Amino acid sequence: MTPVGSYRAAGRLAARNAGPLQGDISVPGDKSISHRALILGALAEGRTTVSGLLESADVLRTVAALRQFGIDVRRECADRWSIEGRAWRTPSQAIDCGNSGTTARLLMGAAAGQGVGVTLVGDSSLQSRPMRRVLDPLSSMGLDADGSSSLPVTLRPSQLGGTAHRLATPSAQVKSAILLAGLGTSDRVEVEEPMSCRDHTEIMLAEMGCEVRREGSTLSLGDRRRLSGTSIDVPADPSSAAFPLIAACVVPGSKVRAAGISVNPTRTGWIETMVEMGARISITNRRTVNGEPRGDLIAEHGPLRGVTVPAERIPSMVDEVPILAIAAACAAGRTIFEGVGELRVKESNRLDRMVTGLRANGVDAHVDGDCLIVEGRDRIPGGGRIDTHGDHRIAMSFLVLGAVAEAPVEVDEVEMIETSFPDFLDLMAALGARFDRPR
Ligand SMILES: O=C(O)C1=C[C@@H](OP(=O)(O)O)[C@@H](O)[C@H](O)C1
Ligand SMILES: C=C(OP(=O)(O)O)C(=O)O
Image (cartoon, rainbow, N blue to C red; front, side, top):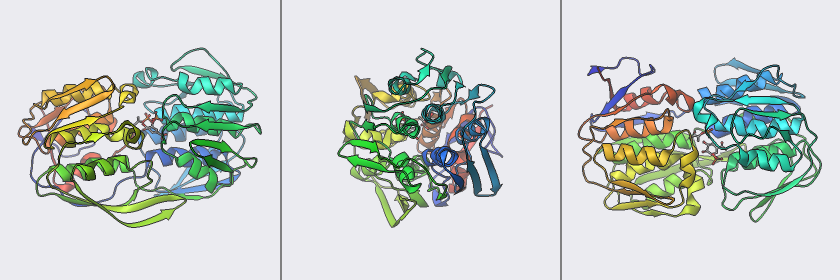
């Protein structure tokens, strides 16, 4: 194996156990809040400025898309973006959402509400992800769209009315699409969520002056639906922070600190789960900025035990299940993740990828219905080669496993880590992780 100089290159990469991970890290901005800051800024009257924006491939897809809708979105300087809200224009060409489900689904809602037509396309992974869950409620509001259940999808300019929609799956993307579409009508717009899922859209709508009410599990838009431009500071992404912090929990002798991480309760299911497993993770310096709670996190190595994670908690940790499955592999006893069927329709079938990858590294895991079951071990043999199916969270999860396994763990591709966490490899290397380019 040849040691890697710059970790940002594409291709295969192996991670090997090189001892403790230690240091302070600066985790990039939250992906969900970054998409929303751009889209809501484009829907607002006046100028919105954003600091801490995540400059990852997925978020840059949203930037490019908004420019196609005629919005002036600029990177003013390092760490400051501006968006001048205005009426949206019908784009002259199809919008390529790349690998980003959030871009595709939130833009469907926003474009429908703006009464503009658009064709949305995506990469092969995004083309295989379900879009009916967004198109059905938008159609019930009066959207005229082609009949397809996946991308490419064409929306035609439509005048929307109201809806009272109960989410069939606890999806923040679907909830957000309906609320954004609802900005284009004065009719009653209600969304009922069976389990609470990330609430960044509601929080940011309210911050920008839109009336959003919650009664129990039902959200509704009030009469005031005009947004005013504002300043947004994006907290660091807890879904990205989970990789180095969980790595610190499983690699003996490690201690990692990360400041300014979103600790919005709709995102902290992974911290709750790790703490239940016995992990030494603490949150200090809690504060709220733009209606979003954030705090400083410290994670240290310690013994973990298997737990059962209830289905109701999954929406608050839906993107962290792969890295939590790595923690479960290092825990004493069995961990059961209940109600994780949604992982089948992410960038890859993440249940299948985790089971196959864990087994390739000597860890027993299986799926039973919608449950993922991982049998923890006190030593991880490693030595597996992972076919990531182009999924960033699968690649990062198994590179973390390599930091604790006896033999290196190799992933087939690392380029797509750019979609959510462009600095992941360099940040892990700065903590002491070692990656090699397999010959
Ligand atoms: O709204 C969002 O920003 C997101 C919601 C989640 O998807 P679902 O809405 O499909 O659960 C999550 O997996 C995705 O990474 C980001
Ligand atoms: C599922 C994810 O994102 P998206 O739905 O935006 O593609 C993710 O980042 O894990």
